Image (tube, rainbow, N blue to C red; front, side, top):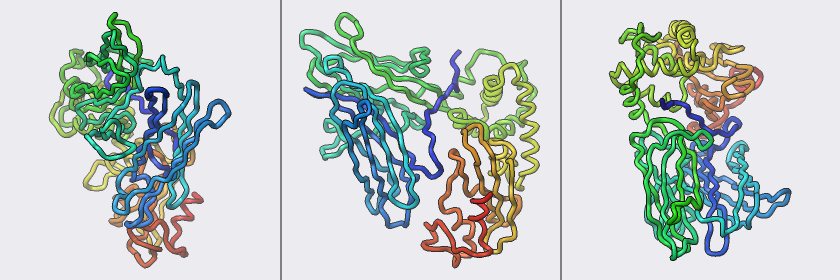
Amino acid sequence: MKHLFTLILVTISIQAWSIKASVDFIRYSNVDQQYLEVNYRIFANSLYVADVISANEVLSTIVIYKGDEIVNFQKNMLVSGLEEFTKDLLDVRRFILSPGDYKVVVELEDQKGPKHIFKIEKQVTISHKNLMLMSDIMLVSAIEQSDQESPIARNGVYMEILPYSYFGKDIDVLTSYVEVYGLQDSEKYYCSYEIIEGYEVDAGEVEVIKFKRLDSKEIKAYLLKLEITDIVSGNYHFAVKLYNDKKEIIDSKIVNFVRVNPKADINQLSKRSDKIGNSFVKDIDVDSLDYFLKALAPIVHEPRRSLLDVLLENDNTIAKRRFIHDYWKETSGVGAEGAMAAYMKIARAVDHNFFNGTSYGFDTDMGYVFLRYGKPDDSMVVDNELSAFPYQIWRYNKVLSTGENNVKFLFYAPSLSHRDYRLLHSTCRLENQNRSWEAELYKKNPEEIVGNPSEVRTTNDGFTRRARDLWNDF
């Protein structure tokens, strides 16, 4: 039986407030040489904004090593338009390389505000030209015909690479770009392109496959598309295989990707033939299913989280019961029933302690953090600063799920209710990191704010404004 939720997201460990970027490395060839493309998208919402009329500026540095020797180097500045600071920055850099093994180091540095850098390294092998019959595969997120000069365009087509190789619930077609080289007129060639369950190292069933006859040309580009509407959430890889007329594979390329598709997941959960009627979820009454699902939300990750959200919007009780059953069986095995009972005991206590009058306690920010990361190792309540809304600081010595040490969360109560604390800022890389947290905390006294109130990062120092010192020293 297929496992829906064995999702593995490859992430880069980053510091708080780091630039967020998706970087891909793709090898191509032309008539007489091979080259490497470095494609990257820098997400605008991760960049420092000094004010609403400033352009984003990111310094890109790419260094290519062969052994200990630097064989190529590029440094350039990416600048957004003054009215486009909310748009992501996209760029492509190309490097001609001879056959061999290389290490490519990419650094992206925001030129505004506090210094923070994104860095990634990639080992790349360039084959001899007569062994390279196919480029690497580019997964495409946006495509259109274009006659304008752009580093993002190839062969008259503007193409944006798919960030993180992630196909979300709103994408129904996998679109890929690949080039084929040096096919001889004296032979016939074709390719297969297919989606296979699991990443390359953990391949499973073939989900979709198509075939295409190829033209015999020195260089030929192809856009290959596959319908993915019915592909359930999980890890997959997309493979393109090149065959000669003897049906021999003469070259192949693969790319791993992630699919999140809650609609297909619900259909599969509803149609599964395995029985759970006598299992540990049988005693959950229909009216309590949503309560159990909402209690799970803080500890459920993608792609389960997207499916959970969709389940809460419909009345499919079979799928809801199976979701709860599968989660605990996959995370706790034979101890699933006991694990669920122990967790729900804690969830009910959190619901009681953090209930705000309108939402379940585990739906509040404090309840969410408590269930996701556990009881804080230390906490502080500050409700006597005249200039600030009431606030609390929680500190965790170590967060096991992220491997981070000394993680802090700042909650505040803008309604002044002690039951309405909201997460304002955190150092946890998976949670909200708000550079303007001080301005928001002291917003009820705008005369205390330094600079533009909508973009300010700090406030005036003062005896009644202790949040920054408490945050740093706690």
